[in-house]
Length: 177
Image (cartoon, rainbow, N blue to C red; front, side, top):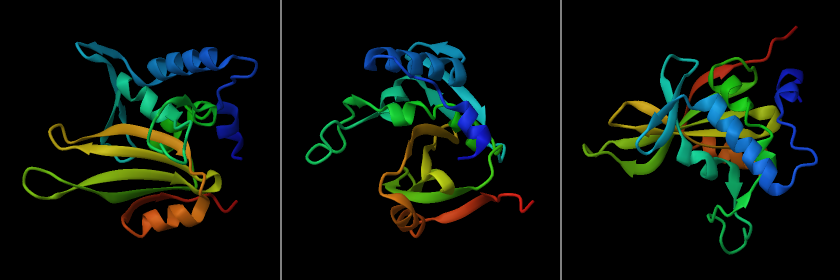
């Protein structure tokens, strides 16, 4: 593991599931939101290419929970996922371009905007860790909405399958030194 990223892991050792969830939630609010709105907290992050990603408080559960019953309810986000939570600080490092070994991909979402154009999603992949960060395009604001971040359990073959559907728009390679 990259030593810089390893140093950013959130320590949840010895905490109950509820305490770990609360600590992760507080870290998400601290790192990624700075404005209170009528519908909750939100914040913006400038991406490596100057575009903006918007973080909404209500995306916390989607990003840091997973299904407790993957075999028959794989999209139910009912269980806090500590593996996702400990990497919460990686999101900023990757999206702002501070981490090498990362690629950014545009993937069609399968949905279309009001003009009939395909709506894109972005995903960033840190290949050494099989770590993915998903962003959804908001056509009204022309910004990207943070959706989720996790280690892909199916590994590189599945990630390569995703990349076949999209276009690589950015690479930050590792130094050869």
